[in-house]
Image (cartoon, rainbow, N blue to C red; front, top):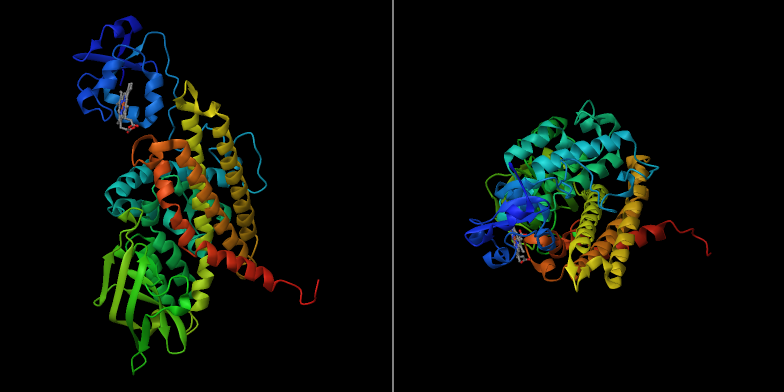
Length: 511
Ligand code: HEM
């Protein structure tokens, strides 16, 4: 921390490689010993020795670099004050459009109330403090989520919140601000969007995404109440982990083409499961697999505990291995018949009923992440100086920003409107009426992400292709936004679903 009060004249005398001081944002940094280790080299630092390098610094670095290297700061300038805004834990961004409109103090919302605002604050504090630092580290080194973070999410009820509203939250006081009974789909949207702010797409899935899309099926469809309670307590308590195992090398979205079989033993007490699954998010470390299998007359879903005959191997994808994406083999795995979800041969409805929430969550995440990328672009354009002026002073750049801003505002508005519908419909109504609109929303959101990723890389130039430094958020977004366009149903499948559901609603007569 700064401890001396210095004058600009005094700083100017420290202007040699052996005695190298520089000024950034009214603070003085002694970079003599750091210069050789500086990733940008020692020459550039020597060029600014003894002078104010604020503009040059912010032209090339994120503010977080200064926070990381705070120990190099030896003093502040006499009578001067820092101008850079330090982000506050849990605080809102001051950048225009960086927050969805309902969070901007001057604006109003027909949907969100004080409890949504309170939850937003609490979840953001949690994410800023505990999730983002771990997410960034794990995204880089590819290792899996820590038990410590899982325990924290279990203790605070966050794990339960991630499944969406429901009885599993009743009787809980979520983060001390929302009663479990009052938790609705707008709260759900809030938690999903806040978690996406950790800006680590692989880790985002590594952070219990498998549980989010599989435990919901157990809660809704497991007939054996005792087993359901046991498994739910284990998973929401952070003791065991669960994932959804549907897709195969043979069939992705084409569930009818799956080849994993579950044959009943002659005594009718067990199924013997044989087959493979591919792209199973979190599969590497899961204790339970909610698995789609072919049964005698159709398709069934089984809860398979990890045991002898279950093998998992890592699949490397374009995001971090922190997601634990696995190839899974079931080699004659014996599963008790009570582990079935729903009825035998009628598993299609189990899988389908799970999809609305999964796709809604994905739309929440990708819209929030797209907005973060727009914020990165706004900050960069306002800070980066080329051809003697700020990027934002170039009309061509302003056109790009306009397109991005309009797209993300529209997409978020539609998302909030559908969250409002979900909060005001029974589960049966949601299934009947919202499958199509949610499918179209997800497809639209990932098309928006596609446009934003494309423009953002052009705005950031080489940095948009560089992992690390100023462009790292943009680079990751461009590399990984496709996960949202493929997982949970591809854009083509979902677009088709949206139209087919609309056609069903057509009156029989000619119009
Ligand atoms: C306390 C002072 C400074 C610290 C702690 C620092 C630290 C860093 C770090 C960590 C990077 C790696 C990229 C990143 O994480 O953003 C970097 C890159 C760089 N720095 Fe610095 N830096 C300082 C001052 C400066 C100044 C004053 C200049 C120029 C006058 C400069 C020029 C560069 C350049 C050219 C790069 C490479 C950037 C790129 O490839 O985009 N640095 N610096």
